[in-house]
Length: 525
Image 1 (cartoon, helix red, strand yellow):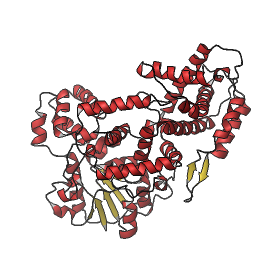
Image 2 (cartoon, one colour; image 1 turned 180 degrees about the vertical axis):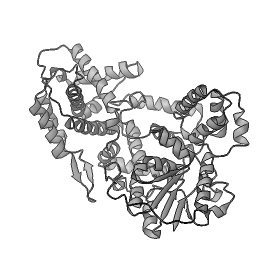
Image 3 (spheres, rainbow, N blue to C red; image 1 turned 90 degrees about the horizontal axis):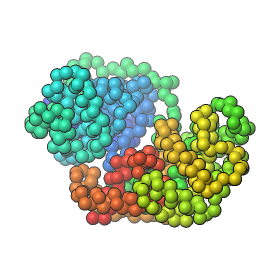
Image 4 (cartoon, rainbow, N blue to C red; image 1 turned 90 degrees about the vertical axis):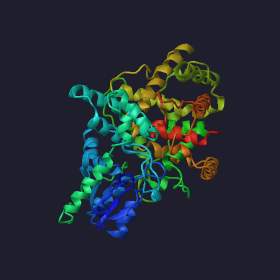
């Protein structure tokens, strides 16, 4: 038994006999592979296409589970090529030009293989071009003969299209982009005429090789001992909001958080602050440093707090970050690492946040309200202290003088806090923090508020009746898009930490384009 997950990459494959030996399944979504392993017990699985936005994509853990069950796992064409590059070390096999390109150019954004397509009734006909197809077109059809010049243009093309939302890349848009880098080719004529999808070609080549093969015996060794059950591989589906609408919206790990970010901004900001406090604890706990400027016993105290309180086992026996145990330690933290710069009145704290926002973000005065500021203040101070400790332990120095008890005027306090504030935002965007349970941790916190959950479910019901056409084509006018961005800017005036690509506080827990799209869905006509 062999299973292949095939969608738009199989469009217009005329020789359907190539699929005679396969059980052909639609593009795979979350849990499909796990279910099919149990139901069909296949010897081989080939992943070509998968779903990205409308419902959650397949887990990495599902693929590892297939390998653990001695299923030969191949990837080609689209999502399959991407997953094969990611899981090559665990035993997944990749095939074709796309797989080799991704493998040679890691790390690369997942959107490189994403495109919009029609449904099963229309044979998954592609609507847009994947970024990888545009890259291949330029490599294979460009008129540039000088290899050095061509390679430079290829890199510039990649840099440009990787910053374009994949949903925007129609053939017409792709032709305009390609013309910027090689105007001597009639890209519009080529894409509308002789264009052959590299996704399709890779898939056909793979199927032809399989057809010629005389044996389908599974010679893949067991990778059980090699597979690491890390917190990254274990995507904790049970933490997603329990709802019957997952078929109609993006992955709930995105949509739920994005909804909260837009409509419950104060609550979302505090949840991300608390998450970052724990992640900073984790960073500091992993540092071994003999720093003469710090009381090592205090550092050991901080590490013990993290070790003893960070994790708990859920009902499935998986380890989850415990975000509810840290507030009680803020007073002890400030007692162990005191500093006069934090001795501000309520009015002075409010003034600081408004001045910082005005000076650092948009250049005009903002108005964060007193309630929002007070709710997040303790966590905010804790994050600043932790940032200073991290910098000092790494021997980078810090403008925050630990144990400083000398009097200091208000302007100097503001300057010192502002320096730490910027350092914290930079650290919050670092790779180390991005990849460690941040999104799930924030979601776990937000789900504890019943009013938010009720509001979110209501919004899903509304969207169910009014399908989101932004997911399928450019339907938003320039005026509507401008109004939306104006709304975002107004919303930012009430936040402790603004959502903006330059700072992206919290937004690194999810794809920024998903955030924009969700706001477009929720915006009024």
